Length: 604
Image (cartoon, rainbow, N blue to C red; front, side, top):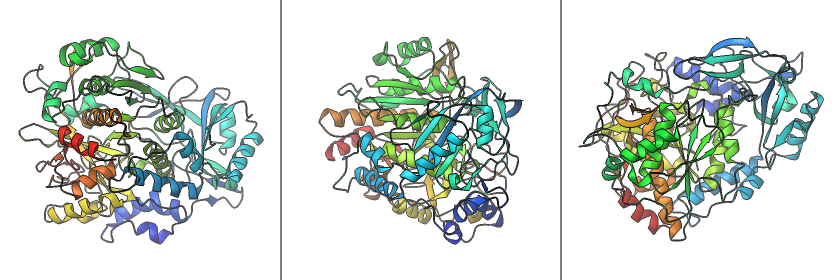
């Protein structure tokens, strides 16, 4: 199973994740984000008896201490005392249950396991990770003492999330008197959230039983895929023609013969932060580029504002449906910015919603275009998110996330020249499938924006051990300096697909999409078609994909197009180079649907 850091690991063992050759600068980054969190989970204030927390109020962290506000966010007015704000508490789950969950998700996902395909139900998953009784009692009592009634809050079915709308003044009191502010990120779409610039304080006995509390001082990344052509000095895509990356071109390139519709399986797009689509744009796209999907519309879960469509959401929904035209599709919008909910962390809100959706109605594949710099995410928060990803995988849900669009430079590339590379999260979690990017077709080559590298938070999981070791052996002599990456970390990405020159329809006009945000829905659609074929013959969905991907590589089955040229520059460096086999630019390569279908149908 993948090697995440247990809560009681020592400071020495946490540093053991990192190679001894790392420079002082990377060790400093690792210590800010790892050592203090792991070695000293709670730092109680001797005078007040309270504990400092970090990230989205997870134990430990560095963002507020450094006065960092991520990316484009600008502080606005103070939140009024009576304004209702979403409060969410992530209660620590049963440790023995977490170990059983990890074992279950790996066994059901490993083709060599006798348990392959034997997935858990939502109820079974929730029962496994139910928090200890004392943890729930402690959190409930803490809330009651602050004047938060049970009527204001709701609990997940097993109590591992507690959330509700609470006056800003009450949240301030709960979290040590911190001040909440409105923050805005401008651009083509303006987004407002509620956060704080202060390190919150909660009682030590409460901090011992929670993973994080939000709202916090973690600022979600805002992806602007329309900026990709400018960054890499590309001209906008020409009018759709023979060489355009359309659904029909992708289906031909990846040998996709199925349309779906043989089962009742569904697929979904996860959208955040004012990213919406227009049904009119979708219909125009279908009529021009995907006749087989014409007239099919996605079910909307959450909000959608058709009058304000964006490039990101339009690209996601048009290509997910275009490549898998007869698979039922859902559009899940989780902003964290709805009225009374601007304090929410959008990705956590999405995962919480996923964990509360019944097995019969939840999509079995999601395409996700959401990425933070890993070093801007608190470790305790990242670990809890990874647990939520495991919960999905154990239920047979495949989650595919864009790896990012700045090569080895994370989401920014501006602050790492001469410094360690920046992996992205959640792509760096061992329990999600990270999708990198390619372009050109004869042959496909790595697209230079494709984010990849190695996690500084999560050790390399066993399922990719052989493939990553082979990369280091093959790439010897072409690797960046050792101090710029963590050679023992989880490798990113896992797989890739085309990611440039995608014609799309948005706001009634022709536009073009670029980036791994384009690749993710393509791979997600392919996985949906594999699911449809397996379910049609009475088998399970493919579920958590990574053990399957690396088993195929390890056995030399040749089910992916191997990408062997190109690289992913960033941080003032050429980055990594694509190599034979797995590499930290395009992962295992791009999918060959026909061969993959034959193989997955042969599995139990």
